[in-house]
Image: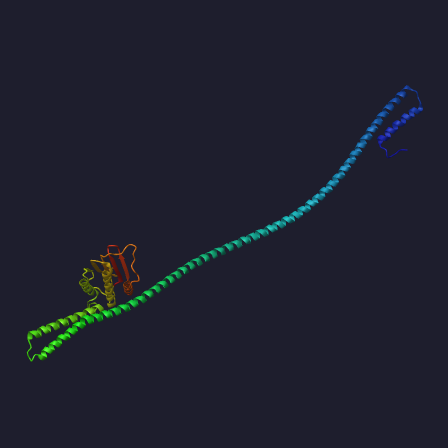
Length: 384
């Protein structure tokens, strides 16, 4: 009975073996049969060997097939693993894509915030610049305010000082007035009073002689008496004029400042034995009575200061016009002033001259040099 499960090679080998058995069973002693039998056995052995080789080959093929199947299974498993890994990779790639999109969105948000922050910084910088600008303006305003306050304080101090000087000057003027009154009273008493007393005595004596003369009157004696009386009257008139001139020169109102200055200069020369030179290049000076009196008092004060302090031997007085200014300059050749020495700004004479010059809308300049005297210069507006 044929086994269908055997391969063709197995069937062929069995067929050869069965033939050998048949020969052995027949027992034919024929040499050819024996040879054939031997050949068959040899071929059978070859076939067995071939079968064994085939079997080994089949086993190898089976093993190779098993290995292939195992490798296919492993490859399948590897493919499944690779597919799983690819799925994981795709999942991770998707997650990474989502993360990238999220990162891009975050970056866009950051860029947007950065842009907003940049705009905010620009706005802040602009506000800071505005603040700095306002701070600078405020600083300038504060400095200006400080300067104004300092100026106000300075002016207030100057005003207080000026008020104090004016108060002292007013006190000084009051004292001067009292001194002038005392001087006037002394002059009236010493000069006018004595002259009038002498005049009264002479008149009394003349009356007594005339009443006791029994009609005998010497004409020559009468003439001498009248001459003496006339001299006393002249002295009275001169003293009266001198007192009046000291109070206010009448010549200022009648002939003006130039003639009054010349007259006072001649009197000053005689009284103090100090030669004076008067120069005036103006043919006719047009000034108001107030201006003339102010200039005359400044001239008086300057000459009095020369007598008191300068130790001068000569004085020059110059009146001129320069542009639209009238200039009065009184200069001496006295001891002058040292380099580091300053004029006393609080002296009453200086205050008086300053006040009078201020009333004239003018300026007062006092300069000097050691050993070369001092110059007092007054400049005031002038229109001819």
